[in-house]
Amino acid sequence: MERMKGKVCVVTGGARGIGRGIVEAFAREGALRVWALDMNDAEFPALEKAWPAVKGAVVNVTDAAAVEAFTAKAKAEHGRIDALVNNAGITKDALIQKMSESDWDAVIAVNLKGPFLMTKAIAPVMMEGGSGSIVSISSIVGLDGNIGQTNYAATKGGIVAMTKGWAREFSRKGAKIRANCVSPGYTRTPMIETVPEKVLEPIIARTPLGRLAEIEDIVNGVLYLSCDEGCFVNGQVLRIDGGLTL
Ligand SMILES: NC(=O)c1ccc[n+]([C@@H]2O[C@H](COP(=O)([O-])OP(=O)(O)OC[C@H]3O[C@@H](n4cnc5c(N)ncnc54)[C@H](O)[C@@H]3O)[C@@H](O)[C@H]2O)c1
Image 1: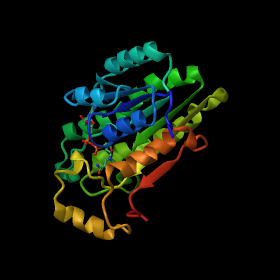
Image 2: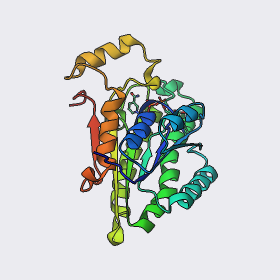
Image 3: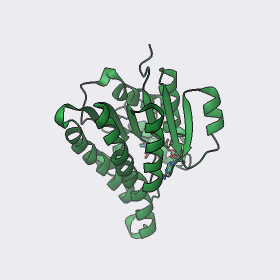
Image 4: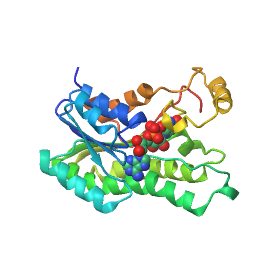
């Protein structure tokens, strides 16, 4: 079944980790075009070779001019954008007394301003077409907080609040544009490679399903919300954490 058949999709942070998994899944599910946006272009040739629908674009999501220029290019190609996934994100963890202002600013810029700029640019294209899906990657930390992640928690909570506003704002005047979040638990990607196993082990022990998330676990939720199977799901937060935060 080709759940993304004919759709034009944009995925930020698409070069590796969860974003790359989403890009590949959308291509596998028959998307017409999957734009993989990232600051790092090293993986684009391999992605484009494996999946003809995929095109890489170097876009820093914190750069308003770059986001707008990209959106104009994507709109010029097919005249519409059906799915946006705000996935790009970074961490700069420290206890609050040790968290520098620059580490606060950097995380806010990528994780919060990035989805703002991307959605500000792309939602109007969706509005013109009358339909679309926006999925933003939050985190269980955005719902429950975490020691050493004041900056990250602020952005991931902010994404949830923005999403609930967008779910109403973009469905006015009959437009069928949905906005939802996926909130992953700890997921095996390059982002958590630096987290020591001694920190991960108690998390696994507290997780009813007894493991960390794999990239595919998160991708499957994003796919559901992005394709027409999720067509009546709007303004929701889907936790994918094996029951860790129950
Ligand atoms: N891995 C986890 O445990 C976990 C848990 C919960 C939520 N998340 C969230 O999932 C998303 C993906 O995480 P991941 O683990 O795959 O991360 P990752 O670090 O493996 O990949 C992130 C990608 O985003 C890109 N990126 C970073 N800054 C960017 C910018 N300014 N503009 C464009 N691209 C940029 C990076 O180059 C990289 O390719 C993030 O939003 C993260 O906060 C991850």
